[in-house]
Amino acid sequence: MAVEQHQKDGQSGYALTTFETVLAWGRKWSIWPFPFATACCGIEVMATLGTHYDTSRFGAEVVRFSPRQADMLLVAGTVNYKMAPVLKRIYQQMLEPKWVVSMGACACSGGFYDNYSVLQGIDQIIPVDVYIPGCPPNPESVVDAIVAIQKIIETGAPRAADRWAAEGRTV
Ligand code: SF4
Image 1 (cartoon, helix red, strand yellow):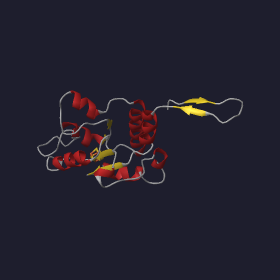
Image 2 (image 1 turned 45 degrees about the horizontal axis):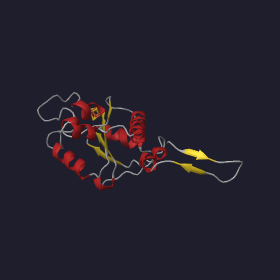
Image 3 (image 1 turned 135 degrees about the vertical axis):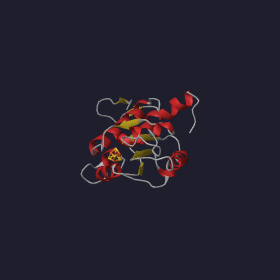
Image 4 (image 1 turned 45 degrees about the vertical axis):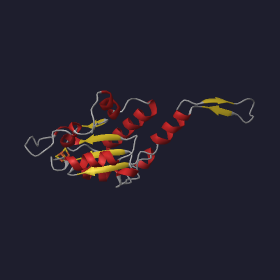
């Protein structure tokens, strides 16, 4: 965090920063996830949210099942075409700013379900900020994805949603 500190001879001092920096700091440490878990990857999400991995360290332990209270959409599992409109609706109901993590081969690319019923990657319908490869990915990679989202927030790097908007793509 960019903070300039001033103090002289042990007297009380002051710190200078920007409103944007403080805002980003608050957001970075309170990424409330909405788990959209449809298959086996969801079990790994449950493991991640257990005490062992302690996602409270990142302010990401407050799981929300209302999209309006969540910051990070964590899509874990196979998404078929019937579920695609539901996922889209949940994304639309989340407030800005929001971030999306695609967890596992199925969410990222359809995985080995290369067939008529399965969406071949959720980024066909919503913007994705972080992809987690693997089948199934382990809890460490979910923690890694949370840290990656924190870095996007802290540095002000463009979100996938911003890139979609620049390209004129809509959800
Ligand atoms: S990526 Fe593997 S573990 Fe995850 S939902 Fe697909 S089949 Fe299951």
